[in-house]
Length: 306
Image (cartoon, rainbow, N blue to C red; front, side, top):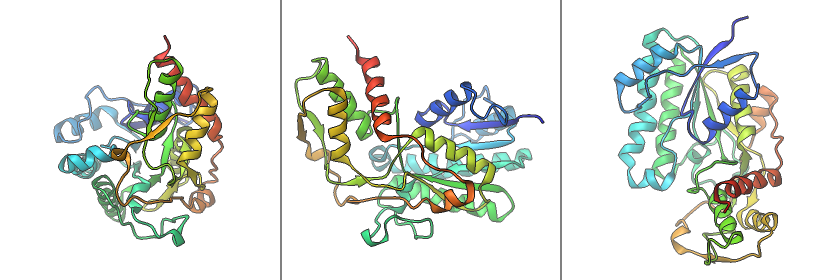
């Protein structure tokens, strides 16, 4: 049987680079082969999207490309909507126009839930979304768009990954940022304590490799028009993870709170309900958080070694 041509937008991003590496290592080699158009995809430009679609000729698509950094989306909201919402519409329209009949996996975010009462944790897909920032709104809007396309006959599945982490993640994100600062302390490239925000909040973290496995299982077993949380199903206290990073690096704990890193009115606890994904696909998170933290530290060791 011929391999399916898989087009992954945003292949050079954090999750995309891990997905690409997993496929080079032989994962899913009996089902898919990556197809990469020559034309660089620019979600603001309809012409580049149409050209990329015609070059890729995909049998299925994982749409990762997006404006993902929340503070940047809040600073430039029009840009976030232009890429995350209208860019998705342009891509879906171009695929439809090309005669695409495969599965389109839209990668949204657990951030769409926004403000969730603690009594409703772990939060399930049935809960109405209430995003508290422009990034979340842009993703929620794109979800509605995708569901509309599904209702009109296109095979579209929506993934809602929660915080996913691993080696190579931008230092804009907490665990990667702390790991970098700790390695700088270890090699005496930093004299200041590690700068932190609110360490008492909880978040649902999942290793990026587990998240990618979920994407492929949704390509295979997800139901068109449906939404699926991708999470670990457990809460991690940020302060506990920071302590583990110090311990794993062998560096004495040195921290200082930076008020600019404390988000006003932020969700104090978060955890995702993953029963739907587990029941319909058989997916389970298998990566150990301690091992994930080690890979993040090792990545920064390699980047910052003397």
